[in-house]
Image 1 (tube, rainbow, N blue to C red):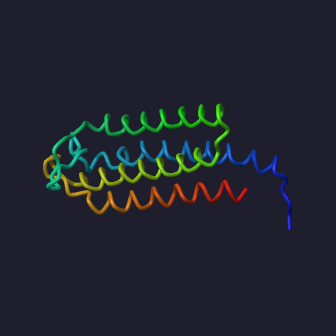
Image 2: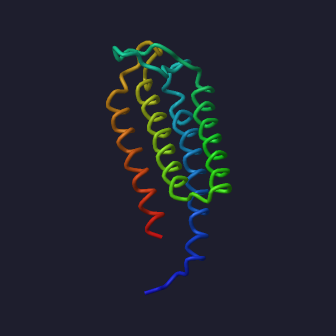
Length: 149
């Protein structure tokens, strides 16, 4: 069995966080861009209580908005770790928010896929439920991984 010192283990976490951050950003951009030929000019981005779309954005905004949100989360988490050293909440936050944003982006793209107009977009109810469940599981996993170290 190979033994890894706590110092060596501690270096792996920032590298893993950087890889996760880059992967989430790439996914947020790639999902809508890859499907752009099969999406309407404006994409439904919000659904009302009845399950019908009630707000839309152009493709550029659908790409930029979650990427901007993710960038702000990364800065806040990095500052939080620097000031408090709280790796457990930082890891749980990065995993859960990343999963949540990717799930939301995938739900939006899927709902708009092969639709001629954003008003015709499909529902996102199941996608929202699955995304929330996955985000909670990711937060729990993040806390477990760091505490286990």
